[in-house]
Length: 354
Image 1 (spheres, rainbow, N blue to C red):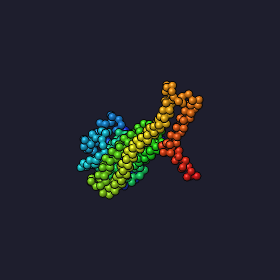
Image 2 (tube, rainbow, N blue to C red):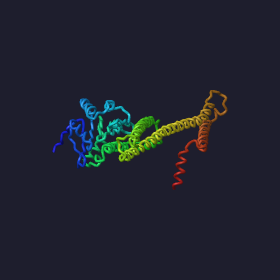
Image 3 (cartoon, one colour):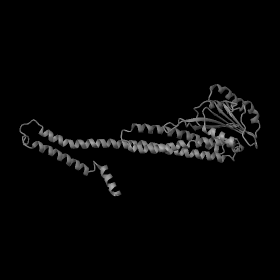
Image 4 (spheres, rainbow, N blue to C red):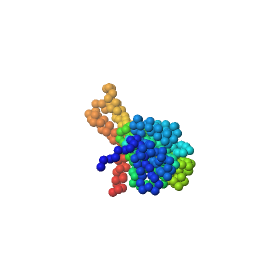
């Protein structure tokens, strides 16, 4: 059996009639006025405007059939808007952001815009990219009419709930990446520039996650606390549940920002310690070499009247003296704890385990 060709290439229309056993599809734009006029229907129109040629027809539907404000329609076609909510007499307009999973990772957090309109008996969603949350809700209402039975506001809640839930895998990835970077910072053996670049990219992504979640949190707070009459009081608890989920994500992003900032401090401390180790090694090397250079310099002077210069074993005596001085200095530095400290600690730890 071949797949059925869609009636509209740029929009899907779902209609639930009161007491119906299923959600109907395959409607056209010409059917919308009659469907919307029957307030017992629940209508969901989902626009996917990928083709520029469809823009004119989409605008006509939004302006002439749904009677949306021209500025809100203009916002739909602008893909750089921040999350917001605006109330109009007959509908509610929301802009929310969903995760873009195909390109999002911890070093590059990317979102995509979803425009939503909520009326008394309709939901309109407009997007320029595919949304996993939209796909999930479509499949749910095809299998079960429960969401549609509870009205348009509950249907919009389902979309928002799925959209927010898809943030969690990204949040989990941030947590794992931060833990991994902490371990790598402590184990790094070179100058760590590559790790530092990763930390900077992670900080940018966490900042964007915090910024988007904070603004989106304000949108969901206003919609979940009875500010707008478009959402019945019986549905508000469901919106508060979505708000609580996003609040957890926002709190985690704040924690991640603190952890990433601490990674900079740890990286700086580790780098400083390694630099200090190098300076300490060079200082100890110089301290040992200095008396040896002094001895060699004294007996290397071009004076004829040097008492030990013509001694038969003077050369071997001088070399022996240098070795004794070098060993004495190494022993002194070791007793002070300036060298071979890690080896001693490891040995003590091994002895304790045995």
